[in-house]
Length: 91
Image (cartoon, rainbow, N blue to C red; front, side, top):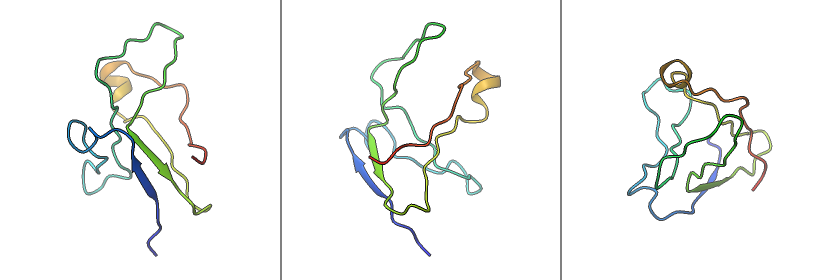
């Protein structure tokens, strides 16, 4: 059964300058979500920031959830380690 997820494009550059979320391969478990940034972000140790995606989603079905996870290669290839992953609240 197909489930409905509403997606709203907040930044008009999404789909043009910034790609829409896509599956990287036919075997991908989830979509690759890109940051919608004009410039690089540099964080000092212990600093935090919110990174915009240019998108908002609404999942009305309570049996579904969105989960944001880091790409598996980020840690060992680039030294990027996230302390936690997030499950978005209802928007």
